[in-house]
Image 1 (cartoon, helix red, strand yellow):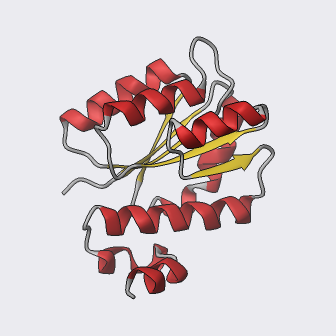
Image 2 (cartoon, rainbow, N blue to C red):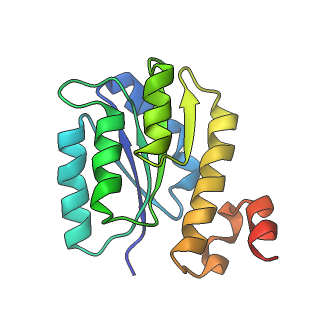
Length: 157
């Protein structure tokens, strides 16, 4: 089976670069992809889906040209092509209404405000990836060092 991917979507190069640095701990088990727009992200998703590559996590900014992160994640949720994919909104400019829409319509799994705390973000991502591993019926033993022990304990009950 192909290695699952983590996709970051942000129109700002420095944000994508910083996020990729913060995701390096996960490169031992996940391939990291980046997109600068929702349209570009869709192209990546089409490509990996055609190859049968699982999408573990999408981390999206909200304020982007052409289509917001909430719109992108909502459409993705409606398509239901990636039912186990976890979604994280990472933004500094989402309004209260945008955040509610992201939760209710895009079914995001978590929200993190920019600027983010590297350690806190990594803890959240580890938790989300652990849920993805269980939800996708992957052999969790292959991911032992990346698993969130709290989630493992909770899921084993």
